[in-house]
Image (cartoon, rainbow, N blue to C red; front, side, top):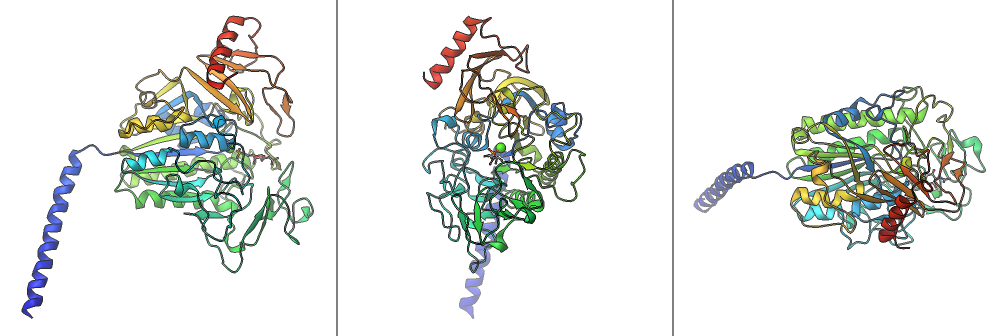
Amino acid sequence: SLRNYFLNGAILLLVLSGCKSKEEKTVVKDDSPKQPNIVFIYMDDLGYGDLSAYGATELSTPNIDALAEGGVQFTNGYATSATCTPSRYAILTGRYPWRNKDAKILPGTAPLIISTDQLTVPKMLKEKGYTTGIVGKWHLGLGSGNVNWNERVSPGPNEVGFDYSYILAATQDRVPTVYIKDGHVDGLDPNDPIEVSYKENFEGEPTGLENPELTTMKWHHGHNNSIVNGIPRIGYMKGGEAAKWSDVDMADHFLAKAQAYVKDHKDEPFFLYYALQQPHVPRTPHPRFAGKSGMGPRGDVILEADWVVGEFMKTLEEQGLLENTLIVFSSDNGPVVNDGYYDDAVEKLGNHKPSGPLRGGKYSLFDAGTRVPFITYWKGKIAPAKSEALVCQVDLLTSMAALVGSDKKGEDSENFLDVLMGKSDQGRTELVLEAGSRTAFRKGDWAMIPPYKGAAINKQVNIELGNDSEYQLYNLKDDIGQTKNLAKENPEKLQEMIQGFEAIRGK
Ligand code: NG6
Ligand code: CA
């Protein structure tokens, strides 16, 4: 009819004008500077000496090395803490974790420790038009107590700034051993609900303690509760069979999610926090990598992670995003060889030194607890360099804010964008370091550890914790291995360090 004819014409006109305005918009967009994508690649327990770029000779990590060689490789890059939860708290909030008494290694049932009105990296970026996502390890708590895993679990990453989340709740060795997508347990069969407890076992469920015959990986300390995929874990879990992850496929699984995220968001500025699970225990390399390092599963999963990083970088390249994406690569804390399972890590370590030249490891106030691989990479924007500047993950919030033109600032987070971009070597002057509930102080080339009670060595993991009845003072420039305590020899320096420390930390 005539009416339809006119209507169609009107629609046709609308479509035409729609096309035209889109074209105009595209032209304008190309003229204006693009907001760069930002990706944090965050490892779990990767040590300062675990990459060939950082001096490892018994392992080769070509893909991560390529980032180090093509970007700024920091030799004084720090996590705030020698364990996971507090470091992850700091990298996302720009706030020292010792300000939050709950920022300690969390069980899988712990409530969320980031307040939903707190500033976070993804929130700051969202305000600047970014879409934000997390893939991988969370370990910052979920819900507000007594989580029902069969309903939407909240608050969680989506309530503190992430538009998209695909996570494991706590650690690979803690229940629940399921993936959670935007608050929902992925693949959950409603007829097989999940129950989780860190207090007591569910009747009739096997445990690592009582049923060692059902385990394929043996526990050394801790890790003797519920058995999933032959691996005894921390905590008890019942049900949720269909949703349980496959440990050996975890690297591929997260990689696929991270790659899909990039492809889905390639036309808008995105932030991706990609938190890999390696080389935390239980180390479960995919069969493609099993035996490849000659160093047992710990070495194998480092090679696996290196491959993952290579594949992820390929995706950025294929999508034409390399020149518009800043990558920050680091680790949440230092290395540990035996962290609770018999997995040959000790037996097959050979000449490999996960801490490199540093003293201590995970859980330690010595430098290897917190000084970690730290790399920034941005093709065409960052010139390859090695930097000795003192940088810390707590500064990423304010530095990223500076990058995207936000005036937001984290409580303890400073703007070191120029340092991260390799344009300046004036990093932090001082930094508080944390291990467990203890803190130490780095200023310039000096490290000061106050006296602490407690064992000098954690015998289970065989790591020197940094405890001593006396003050310790080290010059890291002359003595990177912290072998010579200069506290007595240099009382003035010691006093200066104590004062600087107490000014931040209180007496
Ligand atoms: C410890 C676990 C250790 C590891 C760590 C958390 C025991 C005996 N040890 O309590 O295996 O899971 O917590 O590591 O249970 S982190 O990297 O997430 O901080
Ligand atoms: Ca960790």
